[in-house]
Amino acid sequence: MLIDIHAHMYKYPYPLSYDKEKDEFKLIFPNGEELIRLHDSLGIDRAVIVPLVNAEVYVPQSVGEVIEFANSSNGRFIPFCNLDPRVVWNSSDSDLGFLIDFYKRQGCRGMGEVLPNMEFLDPKMQNLFHHCENASFPLLFDLSGMKNKAYGIYDDEGLPQLDKCLERFPNLVFIGHGPAFWSELGTLREGESRFSYLTTPIEREGAVVRLMREHKNLWVDLSAGSGYYAMTRDIDFAGRFMNEFWDRIMFGTDICFAEVPEQLLINLLSDFHRSGVLSDEKYEAITHKNAERLLGI
Image (cartoon, rainbow, N blue to C red):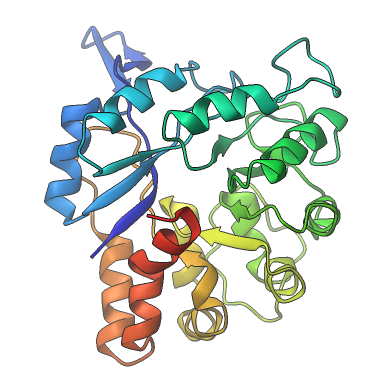
């Protein structure tokens, strides 16, 4: 069984780019029917739909369309809600609790994908974390190594701000994702970019490993190229990482287009399982049971 912890759908996909020569728009994100077809082709049984509401890179969507789609799926899709931390008067004192409660009553099981280009320790981000912790909502985030550009919550090299948040909100499960997050699986070499997929072998453990050892409320999402390349840049290291933290690692896809992608991560996890790197228990935990436990499904 496969549960995708990180799926996207837009009821009304929109153009990411325009090809003048072909007079064609390149649409981003599958609609509901396309997502079902994609997941059927990949053998994915259930999925969490994470809406995108931060305007740094994507056109914001309605949380309602995600809830509507999930509620019509007979349990196959589970909705997350998402709130920009600047919503409700752009204040660090805004009461976001009533909004989270509203979405929780409509079936939402978590918050994400959270990716405003703000610092983890920004008071407005702290306010969002506080209300998610109160609601027992896990929070799936994308992390960035750049300020005032692109998307993702910003942290410095070594992830000191995330470290403080994990300590400050011990009952909030943070789900890490994105190139800048996974670049810290190993200690960064001089000149390595935190905004790229690193392919060099890992010489020493990085901040992600340290934080997962020190904070049981840090979980990880293997979706997208960032998760896949993090697990393939050093196969032996990845095997040790999965065996140590298997109870907080989750399978995901982060599919952003309607075309069927290669089954790279699915094949990788299957190879680890067949070769004995992952036991039955650990393989099943990563592919679906951790998500079931975290979300109570």
